[in-house]
Image (tube, rainbow, N blue to C red):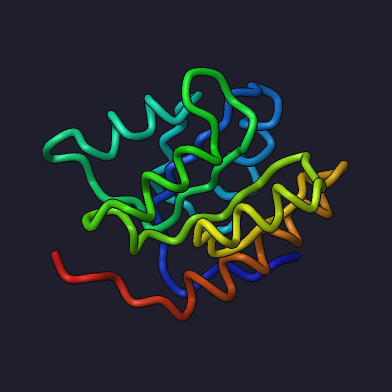
Amino acid sequence: MMTTPARPFDVLLVEDDIADAMLIEEALSERGARNLVQVTDGVAALEHLRTPGTARPDLIVLDLNMPRMNGRDLLKVLKADEDLQTIPVVVLTTSTAPEDVTGAYSSHANAYVTKPVNLEEFETAVQSIDAFYLDTATRPRP
């Protein structure tokens, strides 16, 4: 059984595959996510993040391959935006292509995780992400 992080956290999940989104939501909820918002592409993610009064997420989990605006383009926009660039972004994708991994890190992704094939591996990946980023991070002042 996994331990939960020191505090609950809010997540923006940017994922267009319903089955993957459900698996990710389940694993993140078990890890202490209290508010998980799911959108299906980069355009919807930006609309959500830029809506006045919307709570800022503690973590963005981002797929790369999506319609309208893919994760590669969204990551670049996020990290260039003064108001959004400090939110940790974890790329969670099926792609193991070296150019995707390199591209994500060169665009300042905080972590790159390939989607595991089973729930146990995924939960281990989520635990390692939040242990590093969420247990040690301090939230920026509003």
